[in-house]
Image (cartoon, rainbow, N blue to C red; front, side, top):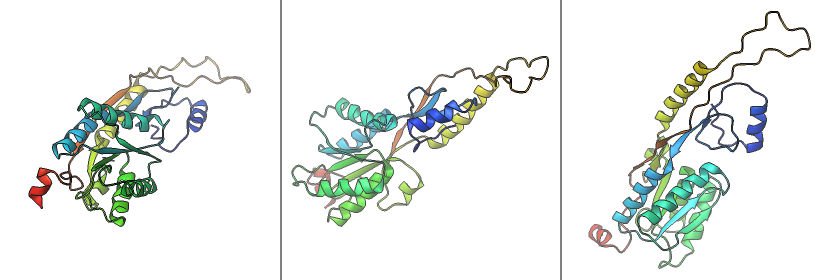
Length: 246
């Protein structure tokens, strides 16, 4: 199984050129990868997230996306953008791009805090949990509260999302089920491998050895994401719901 979040396409190509093992790409689509892909369908959670923010009267919604060109990053961003439009929002969202890191969130927070209040997004969806943490810290450092001034939605929903304060509302990947399904798929691939019959005699020195088992390919699979609501999202400032809480 290749989790391969930090590996480049070149490194993965080199790895595949040196192995005949059955391979599975986990949570990252890789062009030309010799094996099936298992990942999360970003759209269901993204659609829930936009709906949740709209129910809280947010209309100016921003997005912190990952680096353009990374297929998994692009999928998350595209799903949020599609959900945004499917909910009938027509204004272009505020977008900030950068690597999946706390530093990206810090820089995004500084940029957001510098906007005039009437143009500043009242809610932001980050496609990385780390970026969401950096954003919340940066907003706090600039005198903005979460969720009082800006609501924040993160991604992944690891244990840290529950421990962080405020608790992070997050688009949850089905991490446990993905792990279980990845093992099931690899075992299926191994069971389906077809070995060539061994030669009648041992190969002479310097001659080719029998080829290793080849796997019967499985189709790609995706598992749905969902939204987990915590304390980092609240009513849009100035909304009726926010005034009731004041």
